[in-house]
Amino acid sequence: MMPNEEHAPRAGGRGAVLQLLKAETNAMHERIECVVPLLRPGLKLSQYGDYLKRLLGYYRPLERQLAGFSGEWALSGLDFTERLKTTFLEQDLAALQMNSGEIADAPDCRFLPRTDTLASAWGVLYVLEGSTLGGQILSRRLRDALGLETSSGARFLNPYGEHTGSMWRGFAGALSGWSRSERSDSQVVLAAQQTFTTLTAWLEERHDGRGTAGA
Ligand code: HEM
Image (tube, rainbow, N blue to C red; front, side):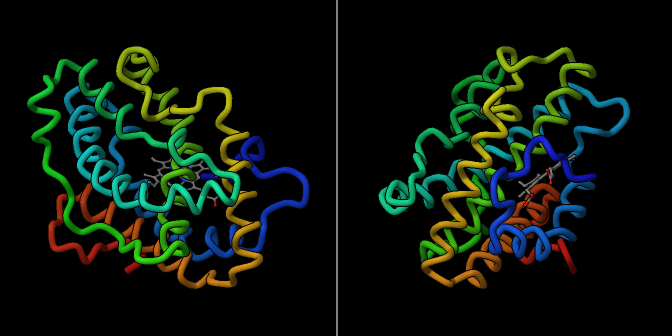
């Protein structure tokens, strides 16, 4: 995919940590694009539902892990609660007629990236927040292929609507500011890579947790 200028951080361009993250996860992003089924020809509603269910099993436990850092992020000017997306996945699945018992029982991924440090939590959040950029393309595809809107099962892919660009710039600015004083970029990058590899493995239904991205 070509970079989308609309979503690039303004004023001052990308901070060093953002440039590093993009460079060090680029191959993994290409890999995960191949695993996401939503752009495939003949996409069916059931495939979309299975994909969302799988994402729920990844986001639900991972956002719980990340919630422990809400206070630290607030100090960097980031409101973590407005970036939570598990509820949107649950709402989308309910819109696709999955009942609350099935949603609660969807299996959770057990091979998640480690978030022992704030640096690693930033790396994970980079991947989850960055995915809203590609989500713009994917939500248009869902509307065209399956007739789904944000109100009818496609909210997760477009959680911020017209604020997508500003939410990304807000995230990028907060991370860059934090990184300038902390100098733990290698930990941030490692966690972002682990996020891509574990999610790719989970979407490929490989349960050994080793992942394949970038291999
Ligand atoms: C078919 C699926 C996908 C497509 C077509 C896609 C497409 C895109 C596009 C167009 C951008 C914007 C690039 C830019 O403005 O420079 C982007 C950024 C990004 N995407 Fe995806 N994406 C997909 C899946 C994912 C998934 C599943 C994840 C992880 C959960 C992800 C993580 C990211 C990240 C972290 C960025 C920010 C990169 C950066 O600028 O640093 N993407 N994606």
